[in-house]
Picture 1 (cartoon, rainbow, N blue to C red):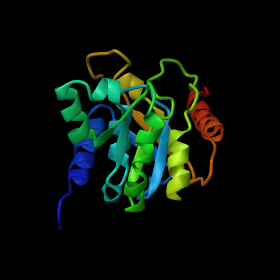
Picture 2: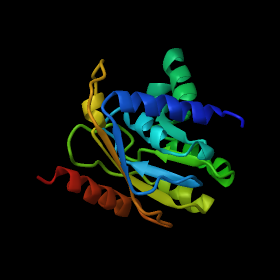
Picture 3: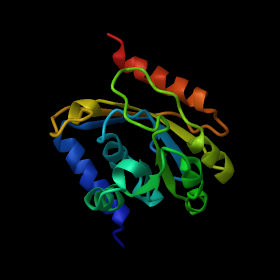
Picture 4: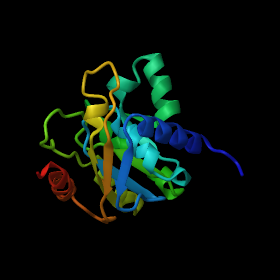
Length: 196
């Protein structure tokens, strides 16, 4: 059996997330093809998703071009360890995402954080359209995912990892979903974890 880069990534991130406090998954992680959209609070979000997603879908992660692709070390890390591809945040990002249509046509999984940046509070930011247009054009479903606990592992602007459990809740696949619907669905999932 051939070992793929995606399988190595999955094993690496699974063992890392488990060592840092564990990972629990609710719902069914897709095998592909689909566009996964999730809330974004930490650089640990993509690794947590990669630990849970099937390596058969060869997950690729949309990453901010102005942060991950301007310096050689970050670019190398993002491409090889996360399967990242650059998406511009200051114009042109929509077109960058649409380049993944062919990849989805080959049973791939694309991960997008539609807020476009990491937030710091419990409220979700506005979801941009790109991920949803990509799914519609490629004819694949959107999978909303709620991520909880990654900010405890690696808070925004933190320089060190900490031990904290991470939870992922995968929603049902949705075709032709609008950004606001996905945002509301993820917010509903997140509220379940905030309840006393």
